[in-house]
Image 1 (cartoon, one colour):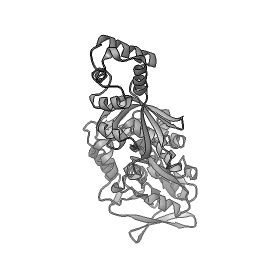
Image 2: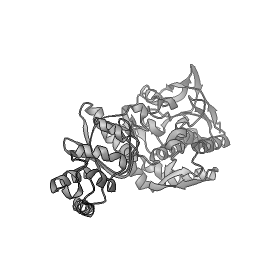
Image 3: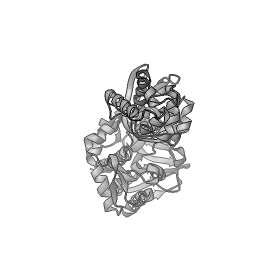
Image 4: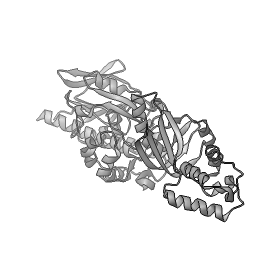
Length: 421
């Protein structure tokens, strides 16, 4: 059987895994990467530690992919988080599972993950062409037959687009794949930032910059209607908020602002989600009875991080020098309300360039979920973030890239085998 050539465009996790799977099945694979080296975005994920997957079963992986998760059921079944962990461990990178089932290299060095993928590619003979930008998919009679890259045509028997989204453009994610797919007839769902920090109107957020909350319950509302609610860690920034729970809820905000850019959202923080309103009220009464001569500002130290107290006092409009035995029922009512719903107004998300993940992309209805093959162009396949898929934070998005990458590589290899039969 004559060796066939598969071109994979994009050297992120999806592209590298696609190239590996295709080459392992006996085909000549050329991997085109516009950067000097592969996996540039992976190197900065997880604060440079690379949260490579989430140790969760398939149904939880699907649920965590809030953008078209059901489309990925087969891909996650083919190449699960368990398979990912085994693949990297066998490749010489010991892994560890942290809180929230997040999986990292034991070394906490993302370069170990990328290095492992590069070694695996070399082992199966993938030809890597770095600093090469694909500009066009060559199609003849409805079949992908090559790629025009940097002005010259590279012939191929199948092509995989794995170029990522438009977030973190300095890593090479500049939306190239959307144009490549659109130019051969694919529909691109509008893109917007997912997993992105939020910007709020209140100036006092700047006084809280750097403050982290570990157990906060965040609610997002529009005109009184709850759009989303989640619990976890967050951090205040100079203009707003970030951290896992904020990033997870940011997709809802980004979608809202893509449709209604000038309509702000209400965000509240429940600072004591483990306590009911009655329990919290009893605790306040107990504190004030126990320390009748302590002033209000000092009493708040039992309830709040020190950095938050001045802001809280300002919002409550209660005299900071008021003593515990002077705090009345109305005061407690105000304090309770703020503890259970500290208010902020979200006016926008940070730019899409700062998003960890891009929502939107190639319409999943135009892709065969069994092979990641195009339903419009024979011999064309997709992997990773270029597809209209996105998930919450915690390693799910890299897993989706690896799973779709694996399935697209196999899909391309099987397509060529069928063409020979």
